[in-house]
Image (tube, rainbow, N blue to C red):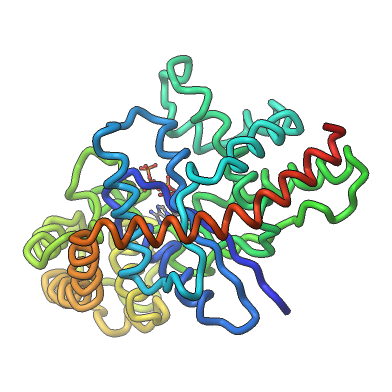
Length: 333
Ligand code: AQP
């Protein structure tokens, strides 16, 4: 079956292990599958939904682009571009916001988490950003969207929007209803400081995450300081519900090796944490350091990165301008 993949990552700095294991690693696998076309977007319009530093935005866009490439996305095989350079995304978001219902958006838990107690002061963009995300996906007729578990609800909203548009404008199957691609295991990597909180770019503590630009000493230090508990490493039959930090670290280890949690549990059962942490640091250094070095190398040639984005934008523009023209026609413009 032919697959059209679309996914995006916000250029809000500090891309981390959660972004890699939850999303980008999967992008690379998909890119290399037969009968699959991929579009990967640096979703810079999403990055302005919270306060951002204009002086840093351009470099953050380049850094996210460099991260895609350093992780294995090949601009010759996949389209890589930044959202703000293709106007159909903003136009599509407005049109689809007139199809979406307030009640649907009011249910989005990520807005509640991100806006916190001060939701009156949150931007309208933060509230409505899942509609922009829907436009991103629907403009490219994506059949599948690889995301981390935190984006599942937004994908469901995107499916609802597509179905309502098709019904309202009597255009069956015009907007393709996409399937989420969420890994069965390890699709939600948690903070190194709190096993109940998602690893996130915006966490004020740098010790809460492994950044994809961290060096060897930073990785060793962060794993050394990662929260654990006073017990020994679990036995295979132990459930980890009450030990979220241990579950998370073992999950990271397993995901990096593409192996079952049980296999990792067996490897370290009953051992001291220090032994496990040393092995985890070594593994992270082996897997993340080459990415980190490649990101830094690519960032030395800004022009090259800008050209990749420009070429990707031209291709993305060709696809999305046709789709937005048809959307407008169906709406009677
Ligand atoms: N902790 C995570 N575990 C698994 N997957 C994750 N993703 C993000 N965090 C984790 C996945 O990475 C992709 C890109 O995410 P994003 O940068 O566009 O936005 P986000 O989900 O809001 O990421 P952050 O790190 O939490 O950013 P901030 O702090 O800026 O809000 C998505 O597929 C996401 O699921």
